[in-house]
Image 1: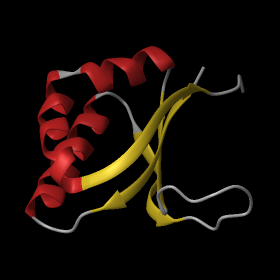
Image 2: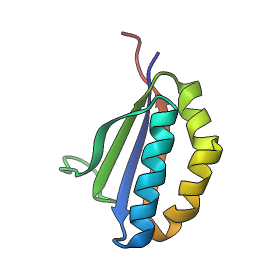
Image 3: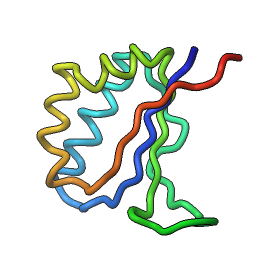
Image 4: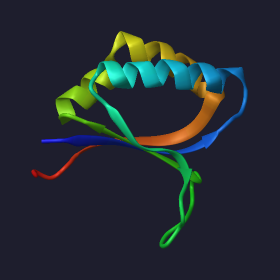
Length: 97
């Protein structure tokens, strides 16, 4: 069953963001992830904005998404993320096809 990484983000432009994007993209691909939404501005329809942009990545399974998040490849990206963005990140199971 597919799973998704959903993040709401505010980017901080600069070299750390460039580094994060390169490292995170490579780590996501290495773990079977595919970007569905990549930093698009969201249209708020209910509730309150915390962060204005959204990232959604599809993974083959929740296990694959969790392996990605805990991987050595992504650990390097995480080190850059603190200077690259503010965010809230979720891993969530999808529904069966």
